[in-house]
Length: 413
Image 1 (cartoon, rainbow, N blue to C red):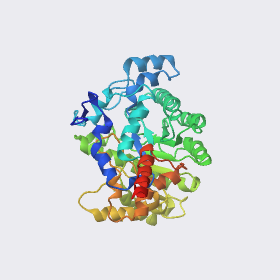
Image 2: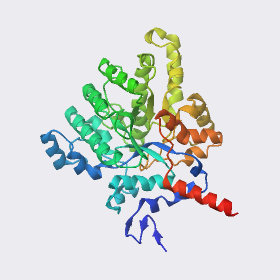
Image 3: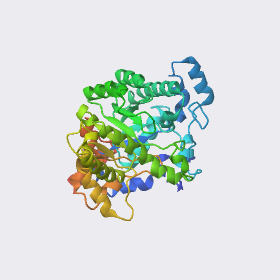
Image 4: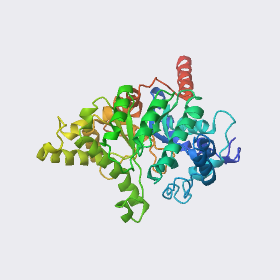
């Protein structure tokens, strides 16, 4: 018998994600997740645990040496803001997973991804880096570009190319260098497992800058979605006025996406690139109805300020895609139901866990909503993402085994 104490697998003398997530796995057993595909559109791995590998992919020998010497920790090569995700070690999956035991093959990150995915009943996950998302705020653009290229090559070569199709990624674009973004799309757009490209929202170059028009045209032509992944930075002049993490987190993860969404609409980019699919990640949902109402009201009074728009802003927003996490569910469930209606959630909302972050959402966050029918739950948890990214139907091995066993039991009965 395996003795479980807290988060530790005593038989293996160490942290184990499968044991750590046993309650999440129990949720899956009490719901019929095995009957449909679940796609997690925003999941993270801690690429810093493999940073010595990634640094080898940096072309510039000077930056490569600097990266190996300084690393990616606080004060490292990208000079990031401090990290507050671990809550001073109280979220055990952050510090303890570094010592989690894995077999020699496949790559460590593949094994760790599969462990939490299987516990949550997730079949396919879109991987993003974690600490490296902050390189967008690095004042040295050449460092951002070098790290982005190195990370994308490492991820494609070592993770996406070698696994069985359950892991995907929207690759990082160093948005501060438009030419580098174009080069990355050209070089990596057709690589295995690449389902789009991602921009970190904490940047200070306008999305309607003409320097990006070729990039948007390329993505539209290739049918590759563009995502804006929210983040925060305490170095932002306005957010620097906050003095608690919950404040900068609450505002920062919505503010930058609101800003870029507004510029995207007012400058007519949905009309200029009507087939480019845009995704807004990790901002929650509460900001979307606010911005819909605010922009519609302004547009009706000053439509001449947005001459390229042929419809009200909210019409375009309802055609964009949104990831669910962190979904605001407290105090007023009716507000959430109205939000779902306003954004056409049944076709435009994409489930995301944001695992392993402290504010992650399990699939039950969607599945247990009383105002959704069964088909809407299945679409949000996987069907919408499958259509958006043209994914093949893929079920985790555990789901196949449980479904087969169910058939055997039914036949025996």
